[in-house]
Image 1 (cartoon, rainbow, N blue to C red):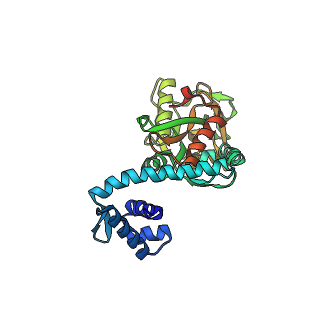
Image 2: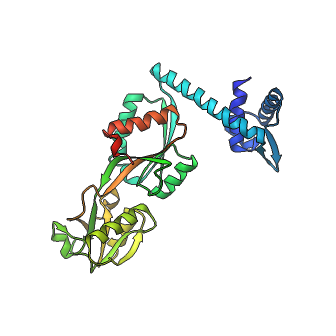
Image 3: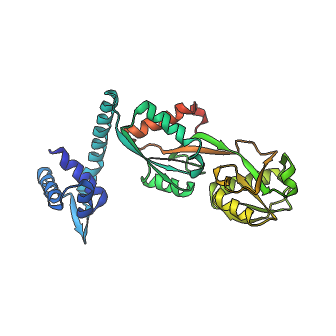
Length: 304
């Protein structure tokens, strides 16, 4: 049985379109069609059936795909391990990242990873917000992502704490609060508050800490999903106060002052490496997850 034909089959089973599969494999469509025909003849079963311009797996094809994918994954992993043992690890990692860790945490992590594993591993980095990043992780678009903790995902996803960010009050430099070293959330309760959208994990965290620290519900007048937008909103409204993470997103706003929230811990918002549990992980991804644990000295009981 031709190993290349099995890889061709796996790609066509995923893409379900001969032209696109051939383009992805860098072969001609007749070459792909020939390979599949030979494989079907050798196996004695139909693997695909036409559906308009697309194809879909037959019942026998689905069963074959399930087992052959596992076998090819193991072959790929064995090759990666052999390269690793020969001192030239290879592979690729598709990494989804929230932008707030790209200035401080991520660059030294990737440098340290390269120092250990060399430059043979390709790391493709994509920026986004936690909710979409996690959805794309679950769909298989990304191998791992860095983002916020997402409730209700513990059965399918692993969360390794890697960094933390503090929540601050952001005010105009002429605000009475700007001269104080710290304020309480109760102090701000009668002010016009801007903060994160309640539809994202961070927005839920902020509302939870506000309920715990204040006798009355804060009236949050405007919301956004990132620090740059919130900084812009506060900067344009002299009466507003922002409850915002202290990240690089606030750097452009020279007229704003960050004031510590006295009852909110400095590690208020944790950032996690998030990965899929109970799925096959290529060797490069497996090593990356283990390296992140080691880099941060993360103990098993700290994971969620």
